Image (cartoon, rainbow, N blue to C red; front, top):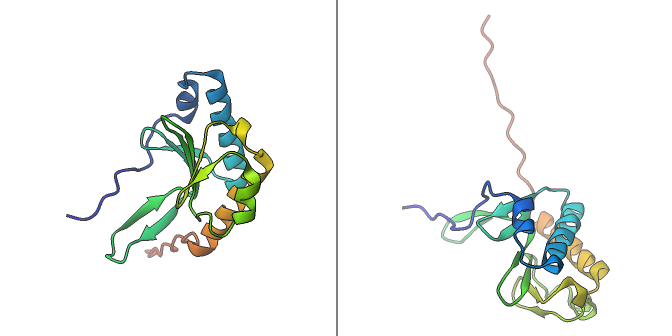
Length: 152
């Protein structure tokens, strides 16, 4: 059986997801990230599974040949932290991470308690740098022209 990623684009509503947040500050943070990420990517917000809001896509392929699609950037409110997915990782951006504020990082995840804890201009710059890098690594495939035979 072919590999099938568990997390895929869903038909769930991003505005409904934002509205379901239990506190006004959390709703405001989600809405702010949606505006920022949409501005940076030029792509609409889409739900990936039940709890990830993603923007744009890139297609990855593992050495095994299995692959899938994933957002260029996204976020998910988790139990402990608000997680921002910066797919290019952080090794390329140590100065930006240092200027962000109160955050923790892992390979491609930025963990923060609230957007009030970070410099939003720096966060937007980090997201923009990451998206630009991902677009160079994974250029969008152009759809092949469809050849049609014309009957006379």
